[in-house]
Length: 412
Image (cartoon, rainbow, N blue to C red; front, side, top):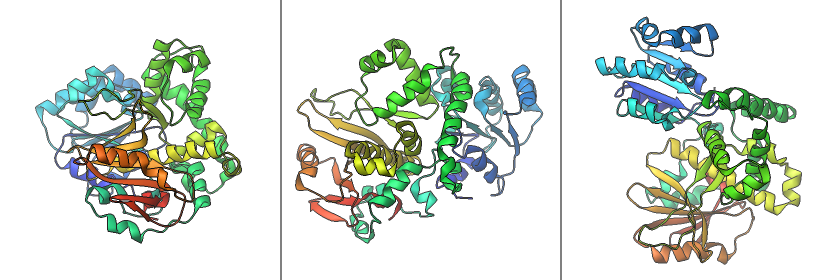
């Protein structure tokens, strides 16, 4: 079993909060993580609402069902019975004993106002994404925490392994079953089954939708636009889906942790920023499957490689975000003067790391011109600028700016 970096944070939460909710997409390892808690000095009963007979009992009498479990309880796939959360609230209000409930779910129930309001102040929420590359390699190095702490000297200990190593990781992604199964010939079949199950189960769990046949087309179109500004009008024309319906469908894919909309960073005192969000997939392996990416195609298509590399870095950043010691938000940056930075990582104290992603194995001085411009405008916020590239060495690019191998995201 590959240890998850988020586990210590969950164990700490179990000592202080009555409810811990582990949310994440299908097949990201939530059930495995929840079961593993039982082997680490956390005593509880484990049930899964994948059991249809049990699910029927829960839906019929949520309160009576919970009363039959007086001790700690792990409930897997809780999104199957959202009303159960209301009954859990009433029990917790009577007894706020830490660690009473561990819940897992394949959709973000806490975007629903009724659920969010009922459990506010009672629950710690943790997002479990596919494996981070550092988890796969068994490394504890956390690049973003190092940068926020100002430990830039540690960068120079990192050596990249080259472009081909990165390409293999992009295509593989981080889903546990893909990572642990060395038979790559089955990868496409697995992703095909994954998408089918996603649509038939998770999408139907989140919302009652009859027109499911549009979703495979929509996923393909969104994948082809990864890293681009989200233009709902264009996507609507391409799919034939009205914009209001399209926005609802994309919200459903976000609730299922398939895609993310990355908001634009802005200085609230100025009005010159492009406000449209960018869209990314949470797993580069799924993106590669949907777009038909292969190492051979990457060698022939620099545009495809650039899009895939940017999405890969995004996915690693949000995984690092999920178990970081710093509370930071991922944005993109674009002005009406066409100044663009791929990612802005803003900590809750306002300090910022600017990130560019380049598929090239070499570095050119103009690759940091927009980061330099940003630094000059916001010197009090700027901590450092990083250009991730496919090379093997860390290269200083000026004051607080570095070209860094992509491998640094998992410690090289």
